[in-house]
Image: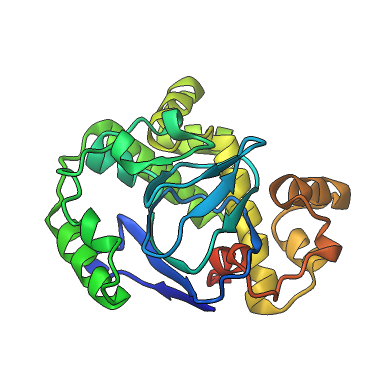
Length: 271
């Protein structure tokens, strides 16, 4: 099983979080859990298709996918060999570049062509071929280097709000956001609906949860200590939060297992 995360060049670091690749020649059917991490994605399958269960029923995915923000975990299942390349975007990128209303795809993984025409991403067909994935990364870097947008006042405001949430590891309050940004809560909610697809409060919860996950994985500390560092002074509150996102109790979660959930959530921490 190959899991690879590729950091974009510095010129793209403000719009792309990372590229990722999953490859596996084993055709054994295995279910995988996907946990919210706060980043929308484009996903291209060049192996056998996957099946997804995000709303209570199983559906076979198309080769080219657009994934919005999600509220809690969902399941994926391979149908044969795996070959996927994905682009994890910074939260507002898809609205800034393509004008997508992110609320319309919250809790959805949809066929890319139903949202964006092939002309918008002309390299899509090459990403579902057997071309070596490093060459695909080069194609993606070249493409996104050429995509531009003119930043509006609302663009600047939402980007600053998102930056504050990440800088605080999701611990900042809504009142602190509105005060620092000099904006009322209603407008902030509208901007998050459009650019992110989630409320600022819920999005902060996801980033806070991700921070705990990163602390446990990278610092090798106990989850209870990580929860305390993340501002959870009530253990039951943290456990409920963890169960909501993962469907599991933190004391029973295997942080070191090699699976998609741990791969996607494995991030570096600055603390």
